[in-house]
Length: 500
Image (cartoon, rainbow, N blue to C red):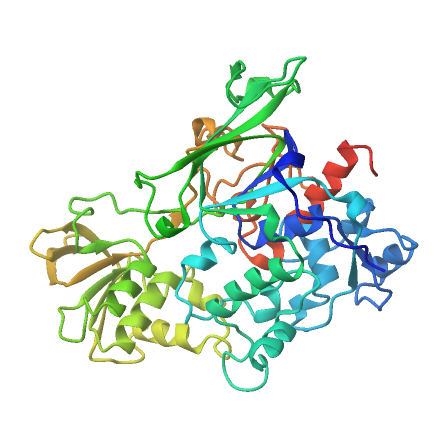
């Protein structure tokens, strides 16, 4: 039987230092807190579609998965992540998912309080991370059960909350809305009694090493030792995390808020789980900071809500050819707002994400794709493939140029230019912005082209032992695989403490 949940922590028994500080509070961080709080996964004995994995699981003889030899369990498994532990965790939570199966998890969970590891999770927004910043009416790209966290099936949660059943009939039937998912993540914390581990409105501005002296160290004193690759064998230090807290009533305001409270925590280990959507990519051209230029789908949504952009407005210019750009186009068309769509590649380019999405599940994105190719016509939409934006003018003019040789510049009238060409993580709180930690050293961290290099079993940084990385920062961009880091990290922390 599961043991009783731990008592609420008070100021007098707060660890100093913390065993673990997690930076970022999205689904991967929530899953990690779940395991660090003492929840342990066990194989439930049901058949697995991969016979050799089933045999290995049976040999555990009631031993928790988190205490197992993860290399042995993961060896030979294949999946849509390059990380073996993420693939293993996925095989246990979503057996045969890559074949389209919606099988139940092969794990049951027991809360064993004696194995909990003291930790806190720091997030800019409410728990859920970037899911708190998205339009709640949008639907998830992944099917609903791929968005769920261990021990609480999303479909069962939806049915219990509002009688909603995903996967019944019709297109998009297997996909939840963004609002469903973020409410689910918040309720997960409540049901599992994890809320005390989460501190919202905490913006981290600095992570560095501080020397560990014989009598200990606090946040107000001690020799600061900068974090750098040539000190990676030094274990005589703590991690110091500094930043400021924005009071709840100011959470909607950005980092320039004057009323803020500074904080300083220390820890033996740091986990980076910030995701990679903090800083929108920019075109790097003249006029990009003008008031009628935005780099956020949420900002466009807010302008629609406030009726700042209406069907009477000049067209909006959408720049980009990914899913966020497609969402902006759909929002505009649903509000009868004309769209000029500018993108650098051919509409038939093999790299376009729309080619990878099944029509039966993603009809709305295929509608945009058809518009881009000219197969579907709409008086409100005009595509400009193989074009780039040359300049954004003060008089709401957008200058674009065809990428073919000898093309002249064209001028578009607009009420709003929406630049949605991807994003990157904000790692300014790390020395060198974490560039020395990438697979390609001294280059900016990028989830697709230069993720942080980690040990594939422990998720510990190769260049900075003591820092762990999970989710998009190390290359796992989907919730289904991002949560796998929680298993690898917890397993390694327990091994370091001699508890396995």
